[in-house]
Image (cartoon, rainbow, N blue to C red):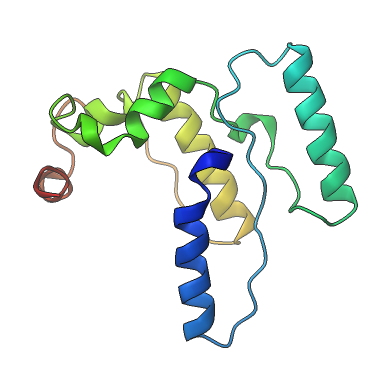
Length: 142
């Protein structure tokens, strides 16, 4: 999520924290929407975040593979007002052959690894077909 989108998750985390007696800590920091990894802005941002992580101010950065690089596609996927444009989950995230889908998959893989949750890689799946019609149906109803 971009910095401007932090309030919603922050409120949710506060509610969860108040309802449990567990201590929470950040799993990692994701550099998102960075199409040009060679730009001075990207390098500067990554260096600042790495230094902050080394000092313990923010959680350790997730790898460059786990970054969400495609600003336009990521914003569109996060925008629930575009529901009419996306009829299926596949359309929303661009399908398994698209870069946004691959970025989300890499991020998910790294999160599961950090949480030490075992997972099995699936072979290629044709996401143009409704892999899970129930999920798509629920998505369309929201």
